Length: 151
Image 1 (cartoon, one colour):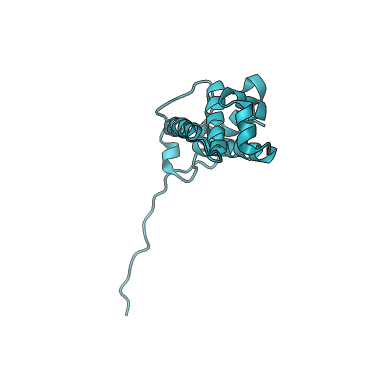
Image 2: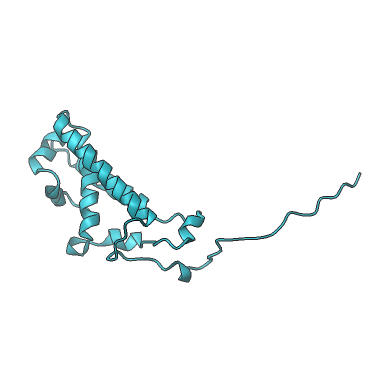
């Protein structure tokens, strides 16, 4: 797993997580899983879009999120934990936790969007070389069949 419950200590206190989730480990696991999937959705290249082939960096999402322990990219880890904290905080009735979590969640999403668009670049993340991928045909040309007025 890319995220573990013990990592939550970087963004929220353990007693807060236990109080909000009422000790339900499934809620924590779901929040961690949802955060990773959300982050992956921003970093995964859309192979059906020509924008993917316009020179943008395409990250190796599988390699990024299969890393464990100290091999994980610390910035990606921190932003994923922020996303997970928000998924837990929406269950809380205390506005101060929600407002802070929402603000940080918005910043994390904005950062992932910038990373996906190439505005922000992490040189330490593994990349995929699009030039070497098979079946790369981003453009096609041709014309329609000639129209004939045969009555």
